[in-house]
Length: 440
Ligand SMILES: Cc1cc2nc3c(=O)[nH]c(=O)nc-3n(C[C@H](O)[C@H](O)[C@H](O)COP(=O)(O)OP(=O)(O)OC[C@H]3O[C@@H](n4cnc5c(N)ncnc54)[C@H](O)[C@@H]3O)c2cc1C
Image 1 (tube, helix red, strand yellow):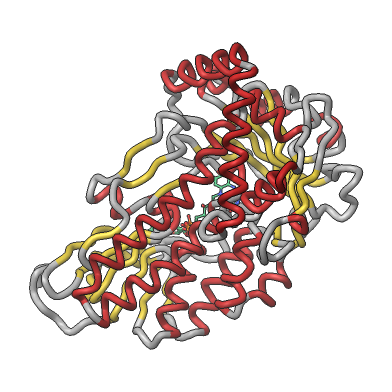
Image 2 (cartoon, rainbow, N blue to C red):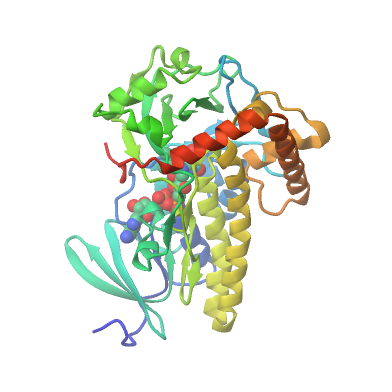
């Protein structure tokens, strides 16, 4: 049978990718009565990076009915700090955020969280299958056909709608040639889990994550529920070039040695897994949706994870995509308008994070984060951004606009440092490094 023939549908919606984005939309759709098949190419539990969640994510877990399960497997997260070059730091605590965003979130091992969400979807009536890969999708006037590979067997599935939640694999993004790499973020990340990493002295419970800037990027410290700590370094292309044949572990150690504040935290640390590398980093697809298809989470775009936004954006986009898919299945004439609103709404939120990310390592931003002033509640607005409240809260958005003005004025006052930073960023953008897929 070829893809254009009409066949009885195997399901209403086929979701490819059983990460947080895929499991979230599959659960919500099943709850609205749709027949959903969720396909995951690997088998849970499987390692995944992305272990620090945002407070704005908590209501989505609650709506899914999975908050108690998350609480049981996560470590409470109460804020974030961004240590200064001398190792001293200031903690941005979520309980000072504006509006009604929860004052907490969680630090998780993704293999546990992603398995929980996948099984939760199954428990809500989703036909959730593992070790099943979607290889290609074709669209016709009636529905979609997906080519599937499982246990060495090839088969096809027919559905009325297709959700691509395949993460950085971006199945449709590649197939339809939608992916555009960001020249402004050609960084790569290396990371591992360690035992024996010291917490910050003011955080005896390990409930705060640390983001330490250094000359060539930034590093994270995320205490995990089992007592280990996730440590990673996001490096600019220029520093990656300096690797010169060093293996991953040696390069990680060499990099941590130049991160201010890292040496004392790592003094008694032992690595408990291989160092992994992820390169070719930030991208966005030109389109987010089309007739009978929609992209959620990393399948659409990937932002540098300095503000831990990825899982929230995956689950938030899944929650918004629910209304598009549900609406389009009920009334196909509404599809284009629903998709347009979806794309516009999400782009605004992504851009708000992206503005901060682009300037994160600039001297002006460094100074503003090192010594925050709560003039006109601007610092609280920044805390709300750090909590993920970047979409609808007018009060927060007004504070972020004031912050941008302060940033612009500070840049004018420090014109030479600002210009030097611009030149460095341009130079880094021209430097290409050959780190592509995730490797060990
Ligand atoms: C270095 C680094 C650090 C990060 N740190 C954080 C952080 O601290 N906090 C945070 O929130 N985010 C972080 N992120 C981002 C976070 O990992 C992602 O944004 C998040 O996992 C996206 O969820 P998703 O569901 O869209 O994709 P994924 O979680 O990647 O899930 C996609 C799933 O699809 C499956 N799949 C892929 N292709 C196919 C196919 N063809 N058929 C079937 N299944 C398929 C994959 O196996 C995977 O399970 C980080 C990312 C990186 C690279």
